[in-house]
Image 1 (cartoon, one colour):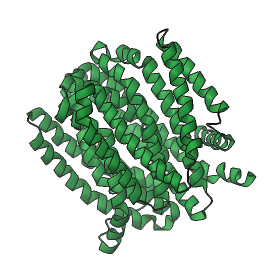
Image 2: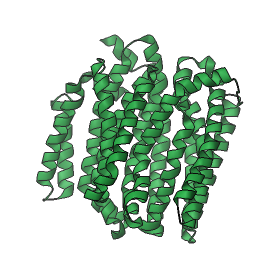
Image 3: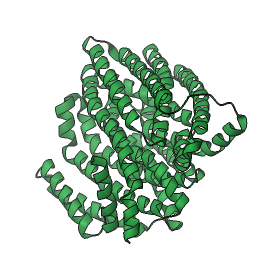
Image 4: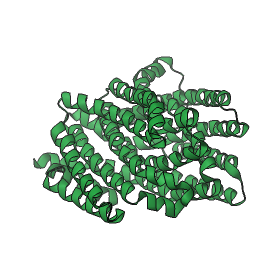
Length: 486
């Protein structure tokens, strides 16, 4: 048993934790400064315009997901297995991404133009279509830095240009700039970040060039298309609710309420996304060695997903309405109530992200696409009906149904293949969470804060006493934490 533990605390964990630390550090900084920006946007724009702004962002993010075509996973997997192939893989993925980006930006604007009747919203979608190009190239540079496990450059770029966006955008808000000014600043910041990333890469890592070799491009597309479909479906699960709500159901005021609640989920969802991105090169090497660490990773991270989601969900139920009212005022009171439901989306979303990463590391790209497609179909088919029955809460329930179906199908097949013990990894954490929720609702009439703290304590106690986190999990998580914070 000592041998695996030496490996767990060694190079693999060091690489995952160091790069996760840089990317997560960038995301945490982004969360903090974005949090301030969200307060400013909500205060100066109000629920209606804030909802429209976030609808525009969600709209272009759906098309942004098309630009990747799985190249982020291909980069991490191929370079993680063989660094010597890095220059060629990077040039091929840049060629594919560049073509897909330009086409997606054009379609993004044209479709939005014909769907929208308001001139201001049309102009907003035009600006965001331009932003799509800069953001797509910026994401590609971050993918390359992650694949080479030098995410400090991503940290530098994120902190500089997200600060620029927030400071400049807030300045325009103070002088009544409106949502179009905010969108223009958003687009400029992503273009500058893309240029900065390309310059850093050219200077410190590799020469950037376009590769038109059709046989090599075809090979990348063959591998990447199923992954690209998965990412499109996953993005639809995240951004689709606002797009659907805008066109099928709600008023602009209720759209703003939903947008603010979903913003909290989207911010926290960066944590499992970053962990998956930085784990992929290391897991790919583990698959090559056939040492079984992919199974340990999925087992530990799924249980951590349940605990992480429960902590956030209980917090949303306990103090979510109070926090939203204090920070955003009574105009966003409904968003505070929605927060208690939204936070629970982190459990299925994280589980789906973890298992998809394991399948990608094995080179099995098609199955995650099928599961994500099932989830997206469930969301789309149930959305209108659930909103008609439950109003804005129905949008979140439909999103949860879609994410839940994706996660359940991935978990079921992973367990059938012998990669997961459902009783230990899924049912045991669920029993503990249900017990904690019972404590919460019993104590809720006394006070939300008391109910939240008591439920957290019960969650910690139950996780230890009922073996939700076993000794191997503890060792891995402690090793990760030590490496991360060092």
